[in-house]
Length: 266
Image (cartoon, rainbow, N blue to C red; front, side, top):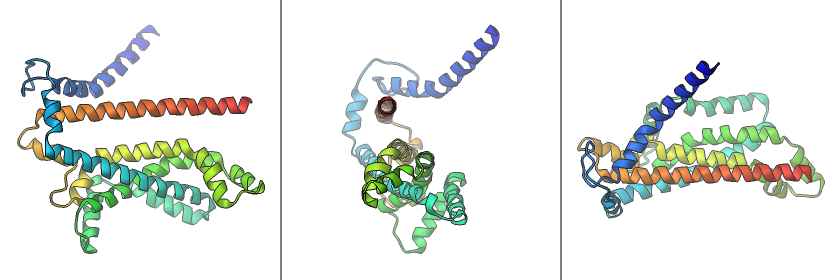
């Protein structure tokens, strides 16, 4: 038993090292005074200073955050509305919509990106920042539905119907009863959509116009001439921000769960 326990711990440790050693290496290099990736020349914040004075990086960062926020917000609203409407549909229509919802999840990113680009061109829409946002909304909606739908199933119609019986209007029952109960799933869906949008490269590459860059496309363009250390600094900041966001969300989930338990006990 002790041998098997040691093997499991070793296996888990190797997976963690494989996943996080490259990120740790990148973070360390972001504080290296020199440009060399193979030699440590001293601790310095020069690459962070260069990053905040680089117009290309700041523009790509702004585009990335803007696209992620808008696409995540829009896909969260649409996905939540679909999840609320699904139980009230007939079985065939519901099955058809769920099958369509799974296509972006199973489809290759290159197929999705190329298809969206051809669709924009066919309708005479010039590729720009707006087409990237529309493309991101398209592939983010399924992730929101996957996050919110289990909460809708768990909630059922009892809370909504009880609110109506107590004199609430349909709008009041939706906004004051249903949506607050779905909040954990909605927040999870938003964070998932935001993460998928920030992480995307292929769909963005096919649907962006000339001069439109996100962090992923900017890094891809620099690979051919050599990635500058300022990108290490930027990646470090993004990783820390995402980590803080996830920790804050976990704390929020824990407090929400504790509040619900206390409410039930009361």
